[in-house]
Image 1 (cartoon, rainbow, N blue to C red):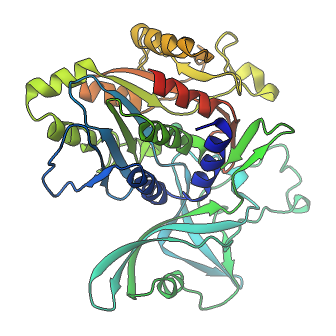
Image 2: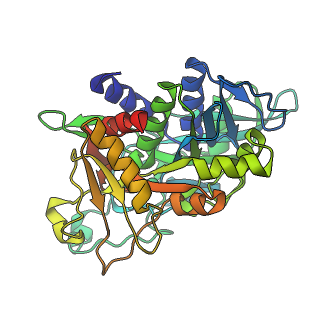
Length: 410
Ligand code: ZN
């Protein structure tokens, strides 16, 4: 696949994946097209060497693997979720002639960019059907249905100096001037066999499409680059290779990963135990394999250059970033770094190193947690981006493709 086709399909994947549920559904579709076989955790796994499989848990996490002889696998760990605004269960707030929606920030949202955006709603709805069955379905309203208006500058003269956002008071978007607006009734009208909407996992998202930016299309701008970019790269890689490989795409990284489908949960361990049932096999797999934890990295922003360690300041389109933290917030070791560098150099791909400033706190990823739980040597890497956790993030248009080539090589 050439870079242009790779990036064009990536923009389509971003637009079609407003929530982790949609991302996983789209990934499953792409895996099916590539010949992967669906496994159900509730049924026996009857595995055949040479076949490829995928398993979905809780609609928002997915593991796929090429089942191969031997124990030496390349694992790629990524996350499917992104910070956003989730709609509360009792959603409608009616005051001053306007209906608003109560929302709760999910993860570390950069809040200011959410104002004045044409927002839509997507997620999973659970309902009782007309034939009295409990069902769930995914919805994506697609059209703009909500907006969080800013306060005019005339009413807040200090807004440009410091705009603080109160999560409870300032975030509810306006959604209607109709007095008897009901979100559940709107949802019911969208679902063909719905008798009653019982519950939902819904979030707001920006209707602006993913796009190239720059005179030479040097940049990609979109919501959810963190971490659908890495999901997409991992997915395209495993669909392009027969080598022993597994991708683990987990929900809930942005809120600590402790959930039924998160990387702090049992999903990966459970799947590994079913592929390698004996303790002997499981240990041989873990100690023979390499986990590449792929999550976006902070590129050095030219307007805020001093936020970076001068000698470890990644640049957009400068290549994949290797993340190092001696306090184990990243799981990279000199040995896993050497292996990654060697693979990149063998195909002429540039890489960059990231270390956070010594006087600043360091983020983390699913890397250290998974490395510790499974006992697998790990490297933390990612594509450099700006505006992480904004409603619109940006990345270079060369780096994701470079990561894809390295993952095929390693
Ligand atoms: Zn991330």
